[in-house]
Image (cartoon, rainbow, N blue to C red; front, side, top):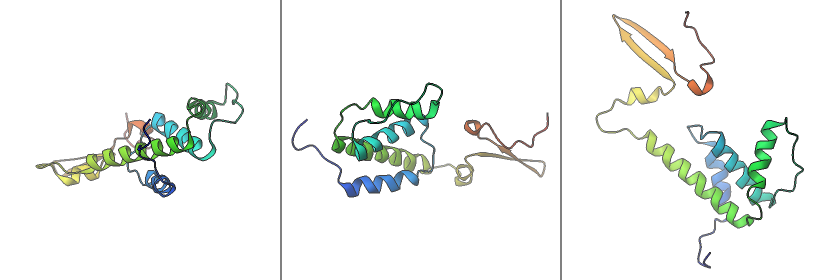
Length: 139
């Protein structure tokens, strides 16, 4: 690594911490684990916690992600965190931009499918990642 490599300042890191809370789209579990691990590495250094039990799935996944970073320096972890949040933010912003010729109203209802036929409007919940927790459709 060269001596002129960019390093994220503490202010950049804190801005990224706030920015990640504003993400409109869930980045997924793998990315969230990566963010968790980088945050812990940047704030506490290498993993120093005892390994959770085999049936403590969530904490074991977090521990594995953090432990996998090994002896990564805090500054590098902080920079990687800022870079990852920046890439998530830019991909979120680009997916929210309206392409020419598209109807903005369709993009506002990301989790709903709205159809109108013969004067009847049908609203269907479309949240496969949430297993469509609310379902009013009868079989």
